[in-house]
Structures are given as structure tokens and as C-alpha cells.
Image 1 (cartoon, rainbow, N blue to C red):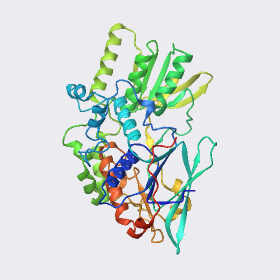
Image 2 (cartoon, rainbow, N blue to C red; image 1 turned 90 degrees about the vertical axis):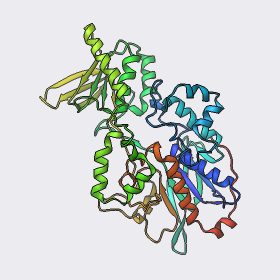
Image 3 (cartoon, one colour; image 1 turned 180 degrees about the horizontal axis):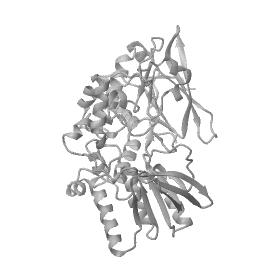
Image 4 (cartoon, one colour; image 1 turned 60 degrees about the horizontal axis):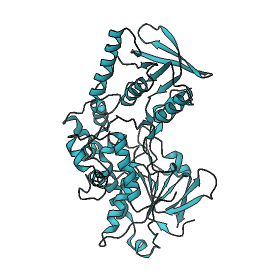
Length: 446
């Protein structure tokens, strides 16, 4: 067990808590400020962000200026531009005249930042319990118990005055569907496709379920990488819908929009989500839509159709049978059912936001909820708890109902992390800061 009481423990070390770690490092570099001690726990063996969708030609859907730091501190050494300079690609990137790097390049930037920042990060650790630490009847701290995912090491216990939960999203599959090496969620597209290619480079058929960006990218990738295979795109819409990335619509992602959304009445919140959902949900980049459309047309001209769009349809069955998946596609117009024997079925069915109750255990009963049953969250992303809990619990994600559409997106990551850090500093007892035992800053612990 750590002998120090930390100011915060971050659960998860994806882009959000990485941005927080950088904000803390820059805060601590200012000798006029009281330092903040922090540690982070990450289940993965090393830093990774949507590795299964790092397709070679896929580009980011947000500007490189919405990186980990720039909106908070344009002078930061952790900006995307500083990354490019370190890789000797700054001039080359500028000459591309493009605000949107590839996803692979942005992932490399995130890895670069994770390696560069000084922070206590324990990889290969999964938080299995969060225990209250009482002081005169109040919950003043938490003990965070992190098990070694391999089972080879003893659990790590970290005590902190604040928790920052940044565990990311959970892949969503239709009820009754279980992922395996032939039934995939897009999160695992690349590794599963590579394994299949090694076993069967002449795959005959794929089924991709979904109408959003990930679905279209999966269709594009499988159609190119398996040149003999038929790729069936199944979605309930009539066709792929383009994302609205116009300048005015994109203001929904501005930091000021979070302020507006937070104070808006509940019916206005829902209206804003309904109006601007097409900036992010179940929409596809226009260029990719046009590329797929051209492929469909060219195949019709040749008389050999490998890319098939099964629109206004849904998959009602996906059953594993040996090395195949028996898939039933039902037309929502006629009710006609088509059975397809596929080498693999890919579900691009999105993600669920985990309820923090799963991690908090008995402490969850101390968290207040709104009229819909969702956790109540203050403007600084701190959970609204009973007065008995004086320690802080903050959310990185899972706050769309209170803070708007950018809650789990990169657009406001740098600003959100700064707001969480400011709140923690303001809530921390200065006497405790002055007398605590400092935790040495070290590179990531693997």
C-alpha cells in the first residue's frame, strides 16, 4: 500500500486522463503553485487508443488543434505541433494543407505524449475495488485497489483524496450476441481481420451491421483487404447519412457550449442533442460516402457486385456454426428474410457509457441522481454526493446528460481536464498539501 495520500488517482489512462496528467505536470512546473500529487491505473499493458480501428487511410474527425493541450495552453510542449517537430515532419504536415491527420498519426502523437509526460502510471492494472477511508464519520479519502491483470503481482493499493474516473466506453452488441473470432465489434476489427487473413485469405463473405463512421470504414477496409469477398452492409437507414461538420454546427463542441448546455432546461438539452446528433452519431464523412457509392456503381457496370448495401434492413440472427456465421437479414419494409453464410459478422453498433456505480460499490448509494435515474454531476464534473463524502469523485466521460455532446469526445478534452484539476486544487485542504509526503514522479510503470 502506498504510504502517501495522493491528491488524486485516475482510473484509466486514455486521452482524457493523459490530458489531465499533462495539465498536472504543467501545473507542478510552476513553483508559485501548490503541487498536486497523482497516480493513474490502466488495464492495458501499454498506452493504446482504439487500436482496432487504426486503419491506414482513416482520418481524424476533429482538427489537430483540438489535441491534448492547445485549447488550454497553446504554448504547451505537448501539442500536436511539438510532436510533429520532434518527428521532423512539421513542414511536411503544413504542406499537406490539412487540419485532419490520419488516425494512425494521431495515435502516435498520443503515445508520444504518454511517454513524454512525467507521471506515475501503472499499466496492466485493473481497479477491482474502491473503499472509503473514514475520518470522524466522513469519507475523506478512497483506497483504490488495483489487481495485476496477469495475476503475477500483488494488488496495488493507492489512497487518494479524489478519484477521476476515465474508464472509457464499453462496446455495445445486440442482445444475445457474443463476440468471438468470427463475430466482431469494430473495436477489434484490425486484429481479428489479420487473424482471419492468416487462416483464410480467400474469405468469401462479410456482413457489417451499422450506419455510422465505424461501419462505413469497416466496409471500406474489408472490401479492399479481401478482394475476392462479398461485403454486405446492413443498416436500418435508406443510405449512409453525411456528418454535419459545418462551421456553425460545430459550435456545439465549443467549450462555451458546455456552459450553455449545463444550465439549459431538460427539454432544451434534449432538443440540442436531437438537432445536433448528426454532427457525431450514425453519420459518415462525405468523402467516404462518395467513394463507396462509386465502388457500387463500378461493380454494377462490370456486372460483378461485391459491395452490397442492404438498406432498411436489420440482422435478426447471427449464429456461429463452425468457421461460419449463419446470418439472417430481415427487410423492414417487406419482412422478407435472407440467410447469409458469412466468414465474419462485424457489429458497428456503438458503445455504452459505463455507470460509475459499478466501480464505486457501496459508495454508489451516496451519489445523488436526477429524475431520470442518471447520476447528478456539477459543472466541474464532480459527482454530487451526500454530505458524508468530502472526498471528490470526478467523471471523464459519461456526462452527456449534463454537459452535452462533447462529453466523451476529444473536442473538449484539454479544457475539461483543466477544469477538473482546478476544482481539485480548490477543494484540497492547503494544510494537508503542505504536510503530505511527496510521491516521486516517475515514468510509466509497466
